[in-house]
Length: 106
Image (cartoon, rainbow, N blue to C red; front, side, top):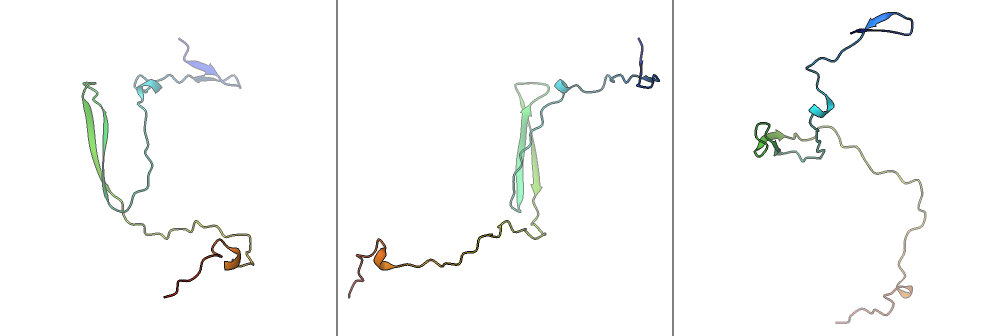
């Protein structure tokens, strides 16, 4: 078996063969990510998965962590308006739906 190959200049270089310990794609289990925002507090969560020895049994791991309070300032998310409002809203009782309403007298 030839374990060398030639590059573009015609020089021979050794081929790289996979090692028996290298994991293939089907051997690697899927990784799940749950991104979320946590309030500053102590939290606990559990990871459940089928047992490697007995598929009918479920293994679980309990994780505890503490989210510290935020120390850096929170950036402003509000955008500045590019449109200037020059007219203020006004209310005219005579032209509104309340034109027939009258104040109660004691």
